[in-house]
Length: 210
Image 1: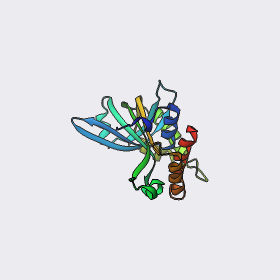
Image 2: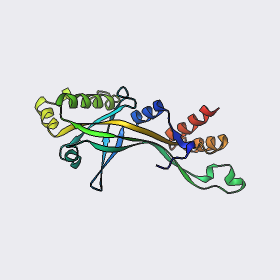
Image 3: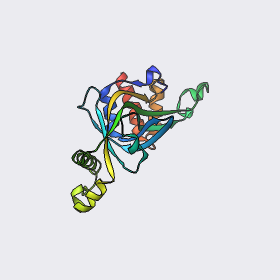
Image 4: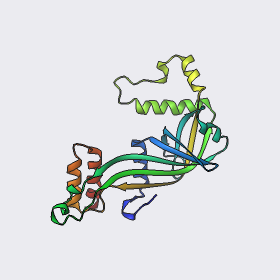
């Protein structure tokens, strides 16, 4: 990943927070020169090793299932907020016109060894935690116990747990760090109604600089 120093995010807590807030990941492995790409919700366990562990599940019908007969090196991307940035939002547009469009975004890239774990209890734990996390906003959260036992058993037969032990992690948080505080505030104001999350990211970075 092209990563200018001023966009580099190295704070592990910030990276972990970004992953947990944006758990739907693009997961890629390369086998015999071909890229196998999947899109999987993952949970992060911060307590494992120095850089954490990712866990999730895949369908046994997924081609990735057979590739995981042995461990595979995986590349995982978590996408957070992103937004088009118009040059019209910079003060310089009115003064000298030496401005161009760009795109703000925050991403976290992870590398690690990926394996499947053929253990129903382990799988149930992952599913229960993922469900509990993502049902939390529902008025009446769904839980696995709401479904008949035979139906859940049938579904569990079709999937397998996966885990990725994180070897390296890097973040690119491009949130107008290369602009003046005045320009950054203009960007945040312009995004306030259409993309409040990116507006907050821009403001948070410049607030930390003060």
